[in-house]
Length: 351
Ligand SMILES: O=C(O)CCC(=O)C(=O)O
Ligand SMILES: [Fe+2]
Image (cartoon, rainbow, N blue to C red; front, side, top):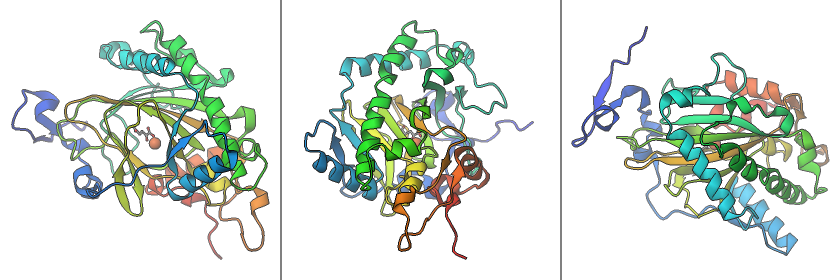
C-alpha cells in the first residue's frame, strides 16, 4: 500500500498537521498553481445580469453577450429571498462542521456509479493530484430521483432549508433557458426541451474548502468545464472562484446573494458553439473556510443531445455529434485532458 510519505515543510508558524505540512499529493503542477497563473493586473468583472429587467430585449442582449464572451455571469434580483439563502447556507455549513464519523455516515458507497454522497478531499484528477475540498452531492429535483439517505439528518432543519432553496432553482433555470433560447432566435422553450424538459435533473453539490497552509500551491476545484448544461452556484464571501478568459485566469468578484451561473458543455453543444462552456477553478484560503453550493442542471442519461436542428444549415454545419448524455460523460471520463476542453470530445472532426 502506498503510504502518505512525502510531506513538504511549508510554514514558519503553525503547530502541527496541515498547519505545518502540506502533503505532496495536493501540490498542483506549476502551470496550475494559483500564485503563478493568476492574472495580477486590473481584472474585468464577470457580467452581472439583472433578472428583474422589464425590457426583455435588453435582457436577451445582456445574457447573449455574457454567454458568448464569458460563459459565466452573476444573476441579481433572481427572486430567491435572502433569508432562504441564509438558512440554506447555514445548514450546509453546520453539516460540514460535524465530527468526521457523523459525516462518514453519508459517504459515497465505494464503486457507486452515482455521484451522490459525502467524500473527503477527493477529486477525479487527470494529473494524479488531489483537490483541497470535502464534498457532499445529492439530487434535489425532480422528486423521483431524490434519495434522502444522502441528505444529512443533522442539523435537523437541513432537509427543510435545502428543499426551500432548491425549489427556486428550476424556476431561475427556466427563465435563463428561455432567454438563452430567444437569444438564438428560437422559441422560448427550445433549450429546455433540448435538455429533457421536465425530466431535467438537478444535482446539488456542497464544496467545503478547509483552510490550506499553501493556497498558492493547491486548488479546491481543479480547472474544468461542466459536463451538464448549466450550473447555478452560491458561494460564501471568501473569494476563490476563478475564470479562464482570453488565456488568463481571473478572480471572480463576490457579490452578496448573487447566483453565479456558468454555461456548461451541453448548452455549448445545443447552441452549436455560440454559447461558451466556461473553464473555471476554485482557489482555497489560508485562514478561512470557503464554501460553495453549485446545482448542476443535468439532462437525463438517455437524452440525445446535439446542436438544435434549426441552427444548422449549409453555411452553419453541425459542429458537434448527436449523442446520449451518458455516452458524452463516458467520453469525457475516458479522455484525460477533456476536463478542460469544453465539449471538444463531441466535436465533428473534418474528414
Ligand atoms: O467553489 C467554486 O466557486 C466553484 C466550484 C465548482 O466549479 C464546482 O464545484 O464545479
Ligand atoms: Fe464547476
